[in-house]
Length: 220
Image 1 (cartoon, rainbow, N blue to C red):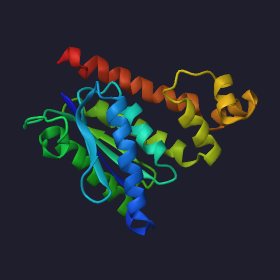
Image 2 (image 1 turned 60 degrees about the vertical axis):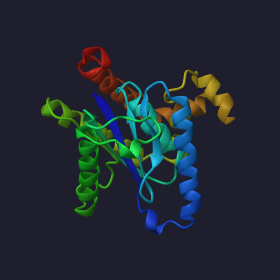
Image 3 (image 1 turned 90 degrees about the vertical axis):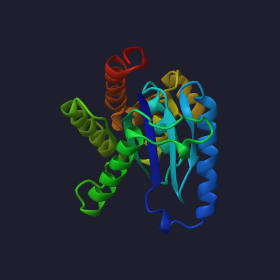
């Protein structure tokens, strides 16, 4: 099983200095390729305009990678489709654009659904959606969970986003984070609590644990 990720920039045509924005995204993707090289099957790269894609060998670091890309691009918003499945073509580390198979088909389908939901105003907040065949009830439950996480994100202030993105997936204490941000520990606590950070983090941890138990590499 592979994890295909396809993402793009929301409202990119309305953003000035698109070239600068693409350069920023390209830099972030290169950092991801270096930091997570041990789980990347095909490197993340920009494909068409403001769209990017990559391929993982497992779902273990899925949310960590996706969230780091999204938060690093703030305040620019991204939408991301994820597909879990097989790959029919040869997987070449430095040529993700040449890979094809169900995993990428599912990721593309999720991108299309995110676009349709926005166009129909069903869910302007949802920014991440996932699919794989089998256990459809569970996958629908996961996507509902992700939708609620998106709703939380939509209500975050700039200071809350700074606090959450600085501690999420990092092995640091709130006191260390306070020093990093130059604020008091009590201020950090207030920002995290008002952002419902612990519920948000727990949701992602639970989904990752389920994926690893059911579809991790050791279960293939």
